[in-house]
Amino acid sequence: MKTKLKSLCALASVLLLLCLCCLSGCVNIILPERQIKTNKAKYYTNEEILITAKGDESNWVGVYRVTDNISEVESIRWYWVNRNGFISGNTYSLQRAATFNQSRQAYRNFPAGAYNAILFDAENNIKEIAPFVVVKDKLTTPQAPTKIEYNIANTSSGLANGEVKVYLQSGYHASDIMLYWANENGILTDYTNLATFRVNGNPTTFNMYENTIIPHNATKLIAYCYNNVGISEGYAEINLPQGCQYDELEAPLSEFQVVSDIHIALADTHLASSDAKTLHSKHYLDMCNDIVSNSNSDGVIIVGDIANSGRENEWQEAINIANSVNGMPNIYYSLGNHDLYFGDYNTQVGYFKKYAETDSVYYEKQINGYNHIFLGSQSNLYSGVDAWLEQDQLDWFDNRLNEITTAEPNKPVFVYLHQSLYNTIAGSFEGQGWDGVTQDSELRAIVKKYPQIYMFNGHSHWDLNTRGSMHAKDSELPNVFNTASVAYLWSSYYIPTGEYLKGSQGYYIKVYEDKVMVLGRDFETGKWIPSACFEAKF
Image 1 (cartoon, rainbow, N blue to C red):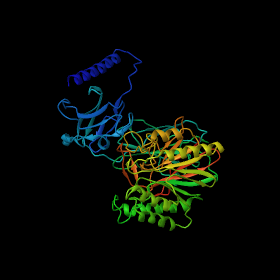
Image 2: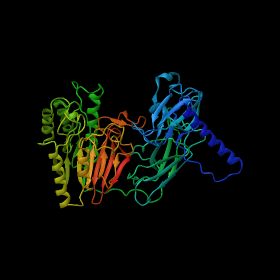
Image 3: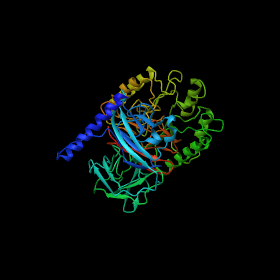
Image 4: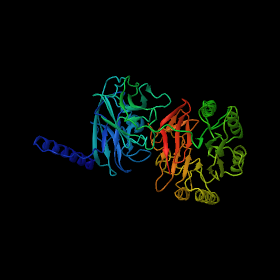
């Protein structure tokens, strides 16, 4: 405790010195960047308290009453700054994301009073303090933002890359901001909202997701505020620069859909909730109807987890649902971990081979002149839910890629594996719990050599409105995509390690001579997901 008190006294001395300098006429004082801050200084009793902290994996945040002796009591809530799914510099809700200490039950929801959010180092020394107060008052629907600014990185690219600043009214009670593409007629009706983001101050700054497009018919960007009570009645808007929109797409050379994790569950299915036994089938049927109604598809790829419990009757039901939709294109499958659950590996793989109409868990298909490669786990004993890729599969994969890209070096190759490489896309990042290929380094070394690859992974169900759904090609990896899920979603918006989210999503893929469009689709609403509509080049 002495060390902590010394740190606190030192911090107070620095603040006092700065005040004296200001009073004595000193100018041009450059204050160090805050390492911990709340998004404002005063909150209502039922309002979310939003906090941003920066540091490494040894730093942690603890929240105490101002009157607490921190050497004698536990923090009310706490979290690691850059561990267990938390990311340094991100903004989190204390009530939703931070761990609650049961010994502080009276302060669980932060009743009226004065508090300190404290950033600690590895030795539990105080690095910085962010004070805030909670007042006893009723939270109301937030007021609309006052202004929005949008600095597009390249106004001739058609891409949304750039920084958005949203200005709020004084005394605002917004916890989140929601953006929409719009025009003179209002919100574009064929798009959902863009990814929502936390209010981290006034103004609040948000970086648009890289490689997402500005719809060709969008002329405005508008912003709403919302909180636990509701959405602001009004909004702020900004006119987009002329010519910044993405050119309207012509007919592609090939069009197909990539989805995953349909998790068909029947009455005798284990590993499924009661509502899943009807909801998953409905979501799959809705997806099939959406595809038939909105595309001239060359095929549908399902990247694993077809049968929720691995039972043959679940496979049969998936086939029956697709067959019930007139005009449904051919469906191609990758093997998922749920497809291996019910019995021994050979039995489970036998179902996969039967309904996928293949003689191996790894295979290749030519679809409208393009190569599609499917990979799959060769064991359910050694790796749990992770993929186990034997050397024969890795060698075959490397050899086929070499042959294909040598013959046609400027043509994309599409690769599907249910589980993802570690720390590549949403769901696979550190602390999220979904790193999923036992032979990660071996597979990574192969795909690194072939920038022509467009790789799709399922497994984590991570919502497409999450940052990181696309890993853009770099020197280490080709383009890699998180496919979300048709059955249900997983979201890290409130809890870093993720939580259940009702929904159904996937991709429409459109292949052109010089690029591939990977367009996120919400199958429940029948709308495009703008924060997951990507332009991808190799």
